Image (cartoon, rainbow, N blue to C red; front, top):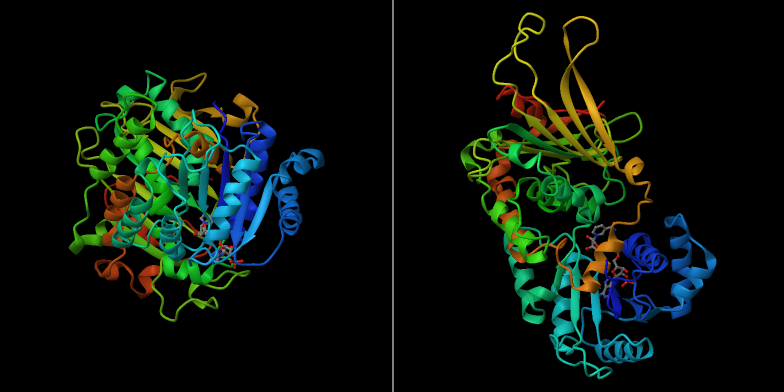
Length: 501
Ligand SMILES: NC(=O)c1ccc[n+]([C@@H]2O[C@H](COP(=O)([O-])OP(=O)(O)OC[C@H]3O[C@@H](n4cnc5c(N)ncnc54)[C@H](OP(=O)(O)O)[C@@H]3O)[C@@H](O)[C@H]2O)c1
């Protein structure tokens, strides 16, 4: 893999949780791996007043905590390339200083005029900050911005964190604001799920083998389940969560991306344009639910109390009478040649029975059961489970004859990522940020993907969803697999959730 281009990485929101726990540890790991260009540096910006040295000391504590292979000498070398500039990035005041500091660091570290902005602030600040970056003239769209090497054009790019908007209209507005300052090729809408090895390997699995793709359609697949379950509750992020809910927090962003990888057509190549246009196309083919029958397409829930934690509705900071969902199960269908008639069930929840993120592909049973005498009724179909977390595994269930007498049992064939490749996991943000430094948008979302994903879930968020956001219908026991309504969603069609043991 090509290393990141030289650049000044400007992190807006330098003293926040994401920067401490993920971004700086990820960049340090990339420095250790040698994929971060040695002609690059980091400039942190937030309102708190501190010096370069104070920020380095603060970060050292976090990096030691987060990175298994921390070593003092490589940290010392890396930390000398980290700088800090205090300022309110949402107003014009600090931009003259900021621009001068970027220019000076660019020259000091031979960064060739390249600047990568990382928006790690609260989402309501994205638009004001982008406006200020534009007004300050920090983006010159490929023209020389500081003259270091006349033979090369510089670039300025921006990584934008989720949540990308709060609904379809605000996402479109943010896209317009970004578009006024940056070209689409310079906008990197990040989803750290796409940095996970097993999500990416789904593409290799589908398109680097010949045996799966012929079966990957409505002739052979009965339905697909995508689950992201957490054992923990909403924790400290109560106000944020109560304004957001499970659908916005997990489904609109991460799980819609997983869905697109499972369902998209083969791209012409493993290039960003080809992959993203297939994702846009498949998201566009999602059928919107009938607003009068939302109960047939979705089930929402709120977790109850347990011995060690209050019920969601009793938490301090949750609005009285809140209908914000901590669990959501949605039934989606594509109107296209490959998938017509195949339901895709997506569910996510807090305080569930197990921590698990997985995709289960349920194949149809054999057309006829030749083994009626020993196995009456229907044979169960094959099932492929792609586990994304906590383990990274592919498993395939198939029927086999038991030794001795004639009887059929289901057995599992398993590929465990850690065993097969004996590689150490790195923070998902690292390789994604290096991709942005290389100009590779393969694992970043296009404007139309984000807007399409919002369009598909809006019926479950606006007033049309009131019917499935009512009183006791919402409750589920902490430590369970969600409300009864979620089981009913599948049971109505003679299907059932695949709940891991
Ligand atoms: N934390 C995560 O794991 C995570 C995961 C996915 C997405 N995200 C997203 O990433 C973003 C950051 O999240 P976070 O958890 O790091 O939030 P956070 O802990 O609240 O940090 C926000 C940062 O923004 C700075 N800030 C606030 N107003 C500012 C301004 N006007 N100008 C410059 N800096 C300003 C704050 O520092 P000062 O007060 O010193 O200015 C702080 O450094 C959010 O959009 C969040 O939704 C976070």
